[in-house]
Image (cartoon, rainbow, N blue to C red; front, side, top):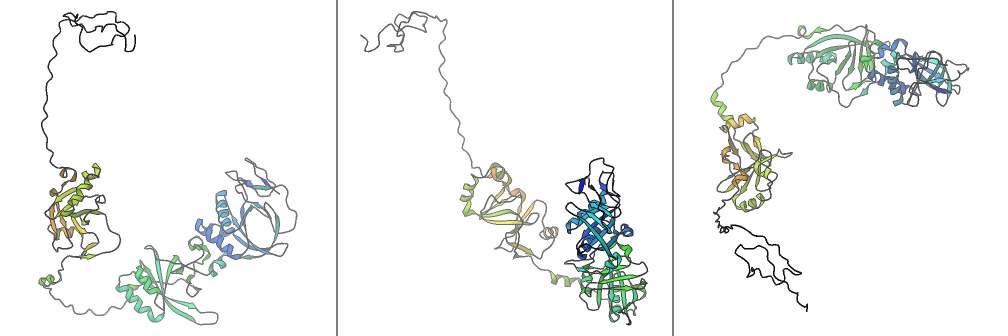
Length: 513
């Protein structure tokens, strides 16, 4: 059974296990158990994208094994130097349904997972006969080796897969395989279009006991995309992409592996041509010797140069007027509006509802027939009249229309004779644009206020209070009902000092006898 590895553990039952720099139990190799050969291809396809397979090839082994129940599976043994590399292998293996183990010789234990971050060890070793023993969480399995698979042969015999969209990058080199009859026309075509290329002749064996086929190879630098598409659809011409120095793959197809990560499986003394459409690999016995195309193109005699003078007056015939035409699709923001004068009352009612920031953003210009509103940030708040959008700075076109011919904004303003702070409105019903000065547009918040009649207010001065020389404060007895029958008049016995407090006399309330 498996046991969890503890932190700082240094002794293990499984032979070959040792902690790495992170304390993870790791052997010299990682063993991946896979059920079929297509899973093996998937494993190396993922690994070739993440790491260089050339570093793993010296100790790489692919073995077909048999279980005691005579079922066959595949084991891939990869050398690892740290748990970081082992983590990459385990991640790719998990995606394709494989199981990852680690060890050094015959015994391999399950590699670490989330339940045991530092890995696993075994309590006892299996004593059964076999070439490989795998220890998992729920089983211990013994395998016997049947045969080994050659990785280089597997790489060279795999079929290409088709790509939906594939284009040459500017830094990539294209290789054209051309049949004998098209070699000279294709070479001349490339030379006339200024494509740098070199040519070579090659002989490809058609099969055992058969003659050799003579083909021509054209190596092109910076082949334009239109030419690559043209040659791809031309019978007798095949466009290939140079992956490494001696390997080329047909454009529109890709090898299951990233060939740049396993270039050592290809012999440097040979040249490999992968054809996706024909599903075959052509191997040249030696690399082709390319010759610059400039030395191969035949140069004919120069033709007589005919000189003719063009008349400047003929250029007047090609001048075309500006026309408003309907357009479809997304429209740019609307920045101006033309409102008939008859809708002025509606605009007045709408002004009462607009917030102060909107009023400050609008400019207004009133003519005899129309009211023009201008807002550089959009006129969405005023859904009145005909809307305009800015074709160029200061040039406004009705919504749903555009100008033909389509010229640059600075050319259009120059053609209109525009100067700084001038605005031009093109109208549907008039061929000539209407010109305004930017100063003609006053702020809407200031222009919309009507004249306010201000009247002077009159004031009336109150009479001055009489001067009082002195006051006397009386503190007489007031009785039980001091305010009964008080009429506000001072009693007759008040002296000349104008007493402020007085008694209204004692009396009895109504109904009291």
